[in-house]
Image (spheres, rainbow, N blue to C red):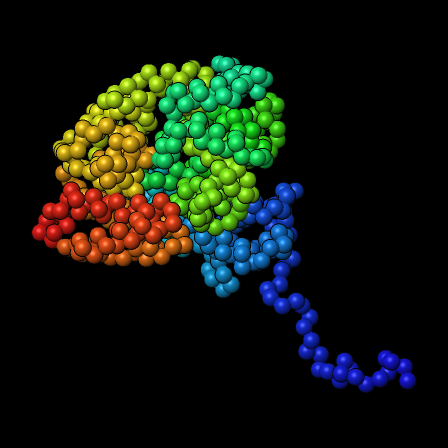
Length: 566
């Protein structure tokens, strides 16, 4: 009897065998759509977030079918892609059977400056006046436009001094795209001697001499840490290659907008400074991690980087522009590196430090936008541009982002030893009818200080003895029309939302703090214990500094938290 004629289980079975592999099946149409979006880009794991942006921009959300297709195309697990996509606020993941969000999203900034300017009332008016099936209104953290508060983003178009009427007009005109301001182009910059210093250094530059120039200028990291820039270069250069440079453009600290200010006006001063730093550490690639809240800046940089490639100043791909996706935690350098690698922005345990183990586990120099701006100016104009400026015993210049109850909010370049009295004067003084009451000296992480401390030099190493720091010099001015406790609560709500959740002291501590701070009278003993635990046990600076608004409130504004003040 032939084998095929024999009875067997394969002949008697009812045909219930599996026709497809286990798990969700990839569908042809979504797969074709994903392939078309990705084009000829390499299917590298570190480009996952860039690919998610492509899908989000094209379809307004991330469907389960597209995520499955992306997983197939990149040959990685769908669960991993889902994990990354749901970590970031600017991705809308739509599961099977769920209704996609409306085509248009409005994000209303609820940072301290915008709250002072009426953001809560603005959001309520928009929710009442717009069709929720057509337009989605969301709250959003700081958009880096505190000088024009209240601010919202409709699509990718930011509306300054926003009103419901301006929003209605934008909708009618379909004005939902980023507006690129006038700025100094490559042609103009190079005609004025731009990139000559870079060419000179590449031809016959001496690293030790450049390092001495940077150290002699007194330039320090201007993202908040304040570490001497030249010394950091030396640490990275001493490590075996290959090495990378990562630019931290995730300027997410509420109240900070200095980096956007420079990039929207003179991007090539920053770019040449970046390339000088890359030369100094012999970096194989420069990564620019730019926050998604700056769509105009992203357009400017993409346009001008292409011109650098065309001019032969950099090889194609040497500058790798990466787009954030709405996560404040990625301003922490190791979280930023995780995001550059296409992962969730979860801070790493240290040591090892990123100067030794950074992007792709290689030594990485991390610099802030403004730091590199000054690198270029120091190398072109000499270190005296900083070191010759002195006030109150402090040397150098600082870009103060000033907002709140002042007449002329904006970026004010002042001597590093300037006091709050000087800064308010530079900002045109207090608004009419407002008396100076308190201020945020360096973003929410720095907490709140009273007006009685207005004569302290606002610079590195000075404010530490007062339990705070200058950080990114994000200054918000409060008046007698405001309650400091409301400002502190705004700050803790921000930290509660933006905690990555990795460590319990930060994740749970911020949540508990918000609940306790909403009571008429604060339980100061309990809050004090909570602050101690958050500061001692949190992994990164977010959790460690989140308690500062609480501690400074209890120290300086006891009358507002006793339950007696109205």
